[in-house]
Length: 166
Image 1 (cartoon, rainbow, N blue to C red):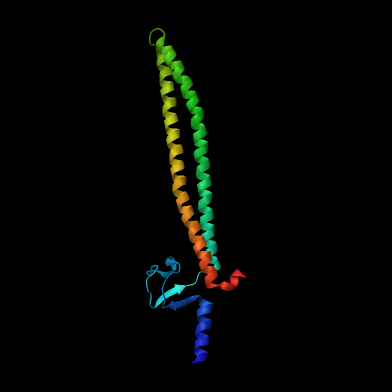
Image 2: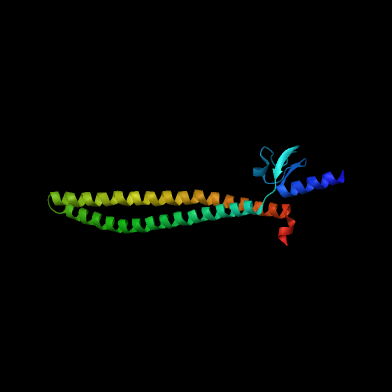
């Protein structure tokens, strides 16, 4: 009867769920086992809400913030490595010059050891900077994916709730 259809429509609108016997081209994460271009009979489908969109946007923002943080850490490590590199170069030249003059002594060996330690510190800093940069690259990929997901969710939200576009 018409009154039962109206009640069903109101229920579906209020709960945001429906049984969709049509092609599933809407947000695969919401559809479960349905994939794009498959035919889904009797699968429950949730509409994309404003809260869903906000959650995805916030996730993307958090990831972009993490990317920025990692890039800054990598830059700081690179600058620190540059300073240590300058110190290493000076220590190495000093140790080389002292080893070329006269016989080997404990102080000359200590100078060489200091230059070697600075070179090791430099290598560690460069490795840490590289790791931070690579981690930033990985998080950036996730951030791009999160941004794309939030854009898809917004598009779907505007389809699910066209009155929101006005």
